[in-house]
Length: 110
Image 1 (cartoon, rainbow, N blue to C red):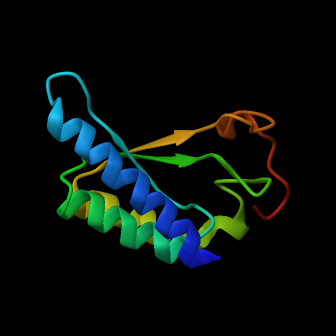
Image 2 (image 1 turned 180 degrees about the vertical axis):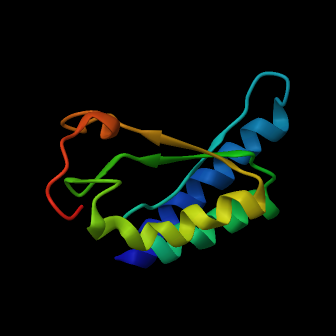
């Protein structure tokens, strides 16, 4: 299943790249990353930055019902660590989050 998520993201990113390449004066694209698959997300981020020339990416703030800053999502921190090296801007899409990440109350120990 992980391989499928990466394949869908890669396919979308390559199609987006074709549109941007054909109309650079009209379009730019955000790389689609499979947040449920941190290793696949890191690989796809590397590909979109180095091979396709993308300058931005988007990560969902809610994946499988879990918000992006939950401890269960910390494997994604490896992906987040690659952004400065690749000089990529990250967008976190908060659609579907119960409350904006910055405004959620924290449980003890989080």
